[in-house]
Image 1 (cartoon, rainbow, N blue to C red):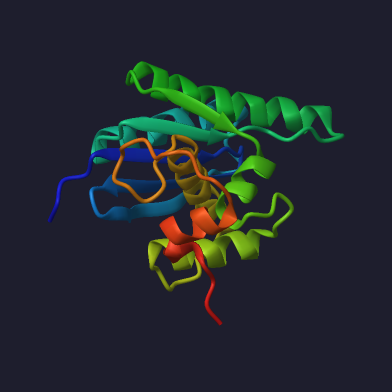
Image 2: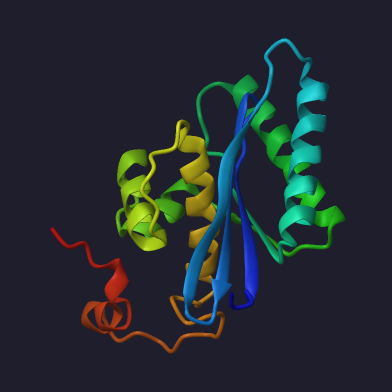
Length: 190
């Protein structure tokens, strides 16, 4: 098995369900390492749930020896209380990554969808199907939070200028034809 040049942990923050996804960037492409969710009990108080989020993120960083941390930025909703709770969940996940000394990047939901599907308004199902093609997995996860987090990790990889080249900066693209010729795995075949 070839050594990964970079391991990226992606997080979809949540106060009841937090998604996580890990990818390994290797010389010959990108490999899915793990994805899943942390389900938090609604009977726990808010601080117990935050502690569990911190502990899970710390555990994932140690277990997989993550090099980079990427997290979905909260979108602005109408419910202020929900936004505050989500911000806290995001904050403790970021704190765990900071404690481990990882570089942290934050991406908007629209940026993540655009990066994975080419459409910033794509549905969760469209994102999942594209991830299945790119990372070669077949199973549909029970919770979309897991694939959302995986999309965050892959978006981070793409945003670093590392599209399918094992961690080295890619050259500027001259247009869609150039992009497609350098990334044939991103073309959907019917």
